[in-house]
Image (cartoon, rainbow, N blue to C red; front, side, top):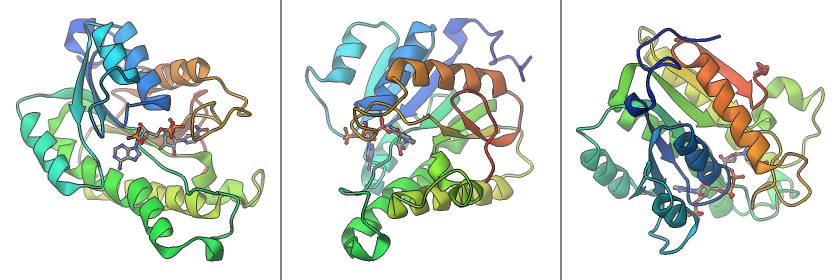
Length: 246
Ligand SMILES: NC(=O)c1ccc[n+]([C@@H]2O[C@H](COP(=O)([O-])OP(=O)(O)OC[C@H]3O[C@@H](n4cnc5c(N)ncnc54)[C@H](OP(=O)(O)O)[C@@H]3O)[C@@H](O)[C@H]2O)c1
């Protein structure tokens, strides 16, 4: 699916701008570099300024990346960023930030309450609150993308997936549901809403045994996002462009 919209693939690079949330490392950092390489203006966030860190180095080496600070679990920093960006408009807002519990092999009853709350808040509550706060900064034909996981699919857990990573899996299922609720609240809106699964990727979260390398995932996510940009649909997709069951 492609778009003929003014800010879609046909637009010149200078017209395209993305807000990437959670870009200090891993997939967020990879996406910041990728969108910049494709000529987009990138506003990439991290939780704290990392002098010499991956995002700072990427920004220094690219004329297309600007860094900002936000912790999506901290409403004060979310409000501060919202005020800072109030005069800007984005073609894409991509919320990548997410966490897993320290030992995802534990079943739910072995995870401490505060850790379970942290995972649910970070992966489900805060991304949607962030989306709501920044949705009006998205152009009328823009795309809101949120990083989820196929582990959040209720259909796949009983077919192709085992039931491990219980708290993480449940938090992504909650994210998927809240994204559907968000879509219902904005059902007369023409903007595209994508829930995206990056594959099992070699990052701090995915680990070294993950079968998908960062570059493959990031380029697949980029291509898939561009293909759906301007469609006005709400879909659950993987990095290879496949639609996933809820
Ligand atoms: N890797 C995989 O195989 C895989 C598979 C499916 C889905 N995902 C999803 O993809 C996304 C990125 O994962 P990753 O593998 O790149 O993980 P990662 O390497 O652990 O990076 C996580 C990123 O999220 C940021 N973050 C965490 N909590 C945040 C908060 N409260 N506010 C702002 N930023 C926050 C981290 O910032 P700090 O550096 O400050 O901690 C970091 O930039 C996550 O949503 C994850 O669930 C990953």
